[in-house]
Length: 171
Image (tube, rainbow, N blue to C red; front, side):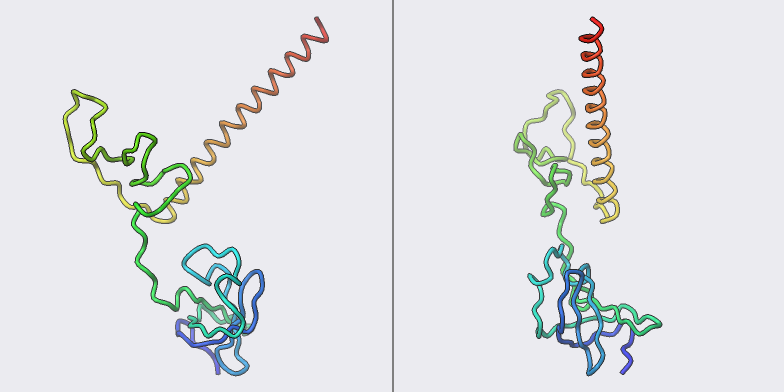
């Protein structure tokens, strides 16, 4: 049997590695599910999601010229509704709906005292939902900015130590 790209099959997990799982979809027809295609969430350990002998639904992503079959479990199952941005969590509270240190929601003033007493009251503006690519770009830009700031601090510190060392020797 030659599997068709895009078709969903029932299969059995026959092997697990640190980079993916092998699934037999027919007698003598085995494909591989890469670790990134196991679940809709981050998969650190495949063994937390799959076991050998487990029956799974898989979707054929591709069949290479040399016969290698690329499979996906997450694309074979009904994808859950994307999480609302209020439910997502980030390390620094970048997403709307997270509470700031003052207890208010970022980007909203929902019934709380306005910081600018004379400012006209207006409805909170809804931020456009970020695509995963835009969220990733935003996260990377913030990381780069923090990294640049830290490197600047390190350079200032090193320059200061060099000046202090040269004063002690020359002085």
